Length: 427
Ligand code: 9WN
Image (cartoon, rainbow, N blue to C red; front, top):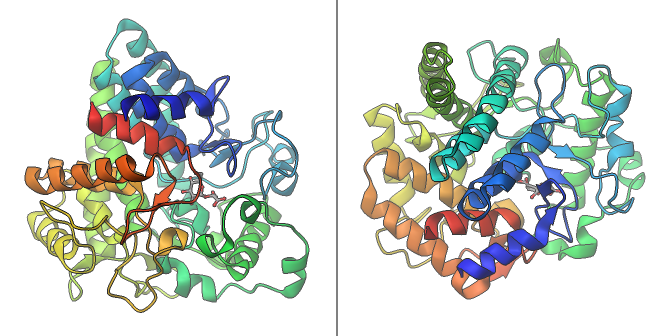
């Protein structure tokens, strides 16, 4: 399995970064690169640093790290929406390379710290030192420009920013986005050439995705005044938990590169308090995204609700609640798991075992939840989840996602973060 995972990373390596998959995703993706760097640290540490630094070379002047960095050598039309659609190079303060204008969950500081811990060396410390101010700028962008709700959390302005694109968590806020027929006719999806349409978001989802980007792009991807004009604004538990964990990781990195960890500890404490205050639903006993257009928590109970467990300073009451939710019939976490961890409540009527983030099991979410379990001393549950992750790859290979009942491989074969995180749990 180690060799197969390593071979997958090698096959997806592209001069200075790793593509998520050769078929579906021929460019560089932001949070994929973070997870992938953790895997590279085990086998070729210099590639872990190349992975992260090539991504941050595309950082915008305002600090945002784009969710896609386009490879100019990839064939045009290989991915939709491509560079022409985003038109990033027409915007001031952007790098010469074409990128998207959105971000993804900020798991990069955590990844950089893990990559360093797994393969410490003078070269790695230099790479960490160079990355540190860029990671700080990434956090500052989210803290300052994206605090649309004014409570110390970052808002995502598009479902793609959550990384869990078509999660049922976004159904309510997305339903309010107009998706005119004209938009639906103006583009051709590339994803359903490579993957079964039944395993991907629907055409209506795509129409709305395009409509939301179009609104953001029309405003030059500026964040001022989002609350008054933008059709999709949500505070996501996973995204904000990642932002909090990033500050914990930055405190450790700061200590290693002779910077001051103090401000990072302060930011971390504030983010955890805001995640609990804004996103914890005491009635349901889980975390939910807050829709800033309505002010309400969104109704679906998805795996996003478990993500705040990665915060090492999550208060005991919320830790307990997440454990109850995770071990319930909805998610089935156990010391011996009989089925994989699903991305959505498997008892819910809209659970779809084949469709992307609406049911299937994903290795990166497993890895984050496992980290959270370890952070809170739940070693036996963490071991159960680790065994489940290994079992998935053992039977199905390094697929993009997995059937949440049978464990069959779904989406793209030879998927980067599956291989990388498998290496990490095997090590
Ligand atoms: C849109 C690359 C990315 C992941 C996301 C996943 C999927 C893209 C798409 O693929 O999103 O960003 O085209 O579906 O949802 O989490 O980073 O692997």
